[in-house]
Length: 203
Image 1: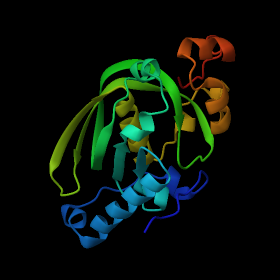
Image 2: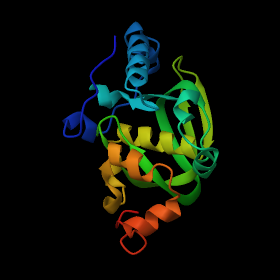
Image 3: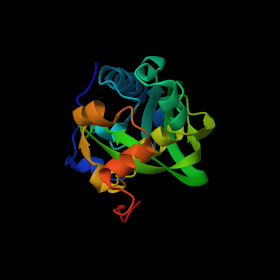
Image 4: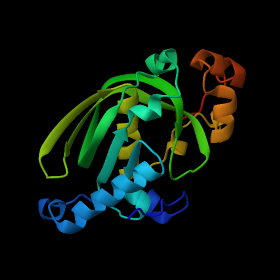
C-alpha cells in the first residue's frame, strides 16, 4: 500500500535519519517498508524515495530510473546529463564519498517539493558504501545522473533538501520547466536566466 509523501515543512525532512541494525534490516517490518516505498515511488512517479519522505527517520532509500522516464528526452539531452536507466535497488546506512568533484549543474525536482524545480550543482562521480535490502555490503560507483540521484537521496537522510543547494534564481514550477526550458542546453539556460553573474553562495 502506497504512503503519502510528506512535503517541505514537515520536521522529519529536516532531521538526520538513524542507521538501521542488521536485525532491523531483515525484519518483516523493514521488508514491508521497502515494498511500500517502491510502490509509492513508482506511483508518484519518481526516481528515488528516502524513508523520511514518508515519515520514517531511517537511513533507507529506494532508487530506480526506469527507461520509460527517459523517453521524453532527446539523445543530446540524455548525453549531456549522462543519464541511463538504473534498475531498482535499496541503499541502507549509506556513506558517500566524492570521486570526481567537478560540479555538474542541472534541474532537479523533489517529491517533497511537489511541482517545483531548480538548478542544483552536484559532483560528477561518487562512491557509495551501503547495505542492500538483505543487509549485504554494497559499493556503488556512479557518474552523471545516477550520481545526482544518489546525492539527492542521501541528502534526504541527512535532513538536507535540494533547495539548500540550488541556484536560487533558477527556482521555478515544474510546468514552466517543461514549457520553456526542458530542451534547452545548460548554456542557453544560463544566458536566459542571467546565471553567470548571479551564482548562489552555496553553488
